[in-house]
Length: 316
Image 1 (spheres, helix red, strand yellow):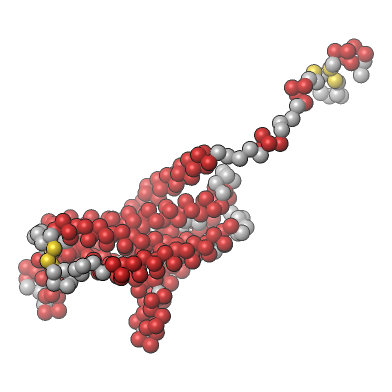
Image 2 (spheres, rainbow, N blue to C red):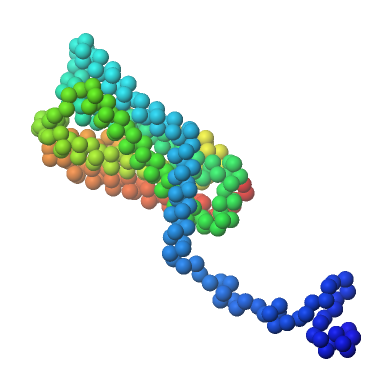
């Protein structure tokens, strides 16, 4: 390096353009600036923004909309069938059921839940929840979500909450479809409960709202099972099928009289406890026991999902 270059503060490197070495080009950021924690408000906003994006994708997907449409169609078909049977007199086996529904429109809602809560609604919820993690892994987008960075725990929480919202949406669709169909085909007015007590229509609507909350909680517990299975595979159909096998096996075990002692530990056992609202007063003990069972399943399978997903090697 020449004396003139030394005096002007220019450092020459062979093959490179001369660069003036100043304090600005050589200073380094303090370590605390690099590792500065993200403000809690920003983390919270990022969480809700990710959840909103996930919900938008879920409710815009044609497959999921088709599943909700099928759920909405079943109460309509059921109501029309009962309306035709009521006009023709029906047979002896159906006379009691027809009389209950034809006597008041609100009863169609409870009847629809009785038909759907043990099979079709679990299928619909399993499709969305089982696809939550496995679907992202199968399409190769899971590692990009984690590189956002979203964080594994946050991403798992978002995926589960998305499944819970869809579960409650499915429950609300059944209730609204059955309620509107019942109001169109059958008379309104007071409601006769299973206990023989008659309550007002407003009281009956409140009991439907309680039923929606209870059934939605049951579907949220099932979603926890599906999400947990979804963390063990990269094929969403495997998690969906595994959840349905779980439901079917539980139903078979419930049907065996000798295995009655284990029935309280099986999730589907508590799905139909919503009929507690059809008694006067409402059997709150039955609802409480069911909600506790749902909470236990959510905690158990949520822990399994977190333990598996937090230590899982993401290769796709």
